[in-house]
Structures are given as structure tokens and as C-alpha cells.
Amino acid sequence: MVIYHLLDTWQKNLNRINMGVMSCYRPKCENIMCDVYVDDVGYICYECEKEFKIYLEKHGLNPRTEGEIKGALMVFMESDKDEHMTGNEVDLNGFFNQYRRDY
Ligand SMILES: [Zn+2]
Image 1: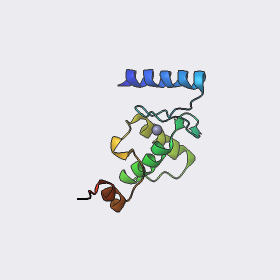
Image 2 (image 1 turned 120 degrees about the vertical axis):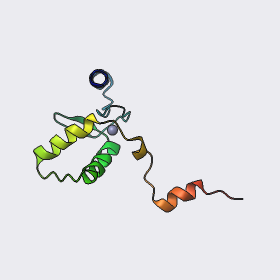
Image 3 (image 1 turned 90 degrees about the horizontal axis):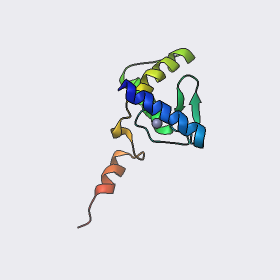
């Protein structure tokens, strides 16, 4: 896992240097063109930013300083992306409506 992550990070660094795609540093996250770059952490995409906020709530974390947020973000960025969190934002009605069938 650690080796995988190192390779992944290395690959992403290469990508960044070669193509400037600004890919998200989170393992298994394929998003590119991130517009947030945090020192010591790296690029973070919109999806992971959103997931991080939910992650904090879920774990009852309430970081209040720059350092605390960064610390929590570093731990979070080591975690694999939650596949359940991906996709477009949708409310419950919208979710069921898109699967509703016309007979
Ligand atoms: Zn991401």
C-alpha cells in the first residue's frame, strides 16, 4: 500500500512536471486540473475537497487552525477515494427520478 502510494505520487509528480495537468494527489483519484494546491499536501480536486468536509463531520473533527486543518487533510489524502461519493450532486428526489421508468 505504501509502495503503491509512493509510485502513485511519483507518477503524479511526473505528470505534473511533464504535462501540468495538476492531478489530484489522492490515491485512486483520477481528477485533473485541480485549482487548489496546499503546501505539503499537494493538489486536491473539488470532489476530494467536498469529501474532506464530510469526512471531518463524520469523524467529529473540528479543526480550527491552519495547522489542524492541514494535519487532518494530510491524513485524509492518504485514504482511498470513496467511490460512493463520486458522481454529480443530486438530491433524493432527483436520484429516484433518474431511475424512474415510464410504463
Ligand atoms: Zn481528488
